[in-house]
Image (cartoon, rainbow, N blue to C red; front, side, top):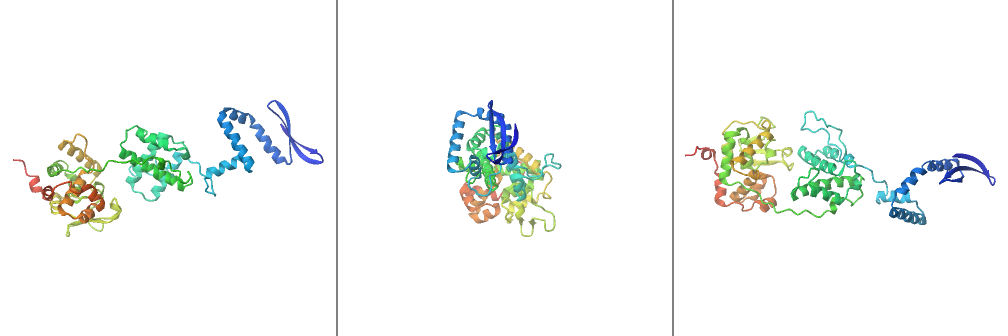
Length: 405
């Protein structure tokens, strides 16, 4: 197949002589450039023929119908496809991006001294890291998204993710088939909703096409917090004092002040501006960066809290706090004979319940615990009686640690 320059009817043209489907064919072109472009398409004819042969009859009819419509209305089929890909944005076409590329990396994982998987920040996780998302939240987000990526495949295009695929992932319990409860399913779908909203902002998927939005809302059972009774509170205090003394300050602040376990680990007793404790006013202040809600909070220490803290000299933060706290909870579960595991956050729930009942001052308890009055009334109103609330406020070391007769 060659290009020849010829004169036809007194006008210079270029011809391409070739053989198509066993038949010789000569085509005429006004410019050499168009003749060369045509020749390149002829070279790909076997490939195109094989592709066409692989299409189903339905696909062929669809292509023919689309071609006829485009030709009748004066535009090409390629232009129609490109316009549809842009989904009306009018300026740019949607970016092609796989799940692995879109999810990306958050950079160095600070849980490792030398992170073997450290990579440059990129994608959704990189943007979240740049937005200064807390380490705990970033790790949780990364875990959920990587789980979905492993289930769906890292090379899957973001535009190919459907609501059906997400439902399959949720029902399967993730890539490890963990049989997730509705709470976990809702939590995981929230990660994906956040991720695909980012994809919309980045022109990766079209507006109003977040696949998570097509799922039915997951309704959860009403929250019913577990509250330790007064005797159980005494038991865990005694156990902690005798077998896990390094965790006693954390337990006391969690039980009698309602401070979250994660927040207790950020408190400091060192002198100077970094110290959280004001022993003259019997209170301490949680700085905004130390709280879950990122809001500064003053907490008053109750009389029994102060007495328990006086039992031993302590310095905060304690070394290896997470590990030591988990060891204490395992011992407490055995001590209280809880066969189904340690009730989630029951120590803090106990403070909220007893505090609300003993003071009838939702504002004060809310300030201490760092939540809202709506949450306080919705979850903790009248879970305990007045007598037990009074007994809780009178749990002092003298009575609790006295040897049994």
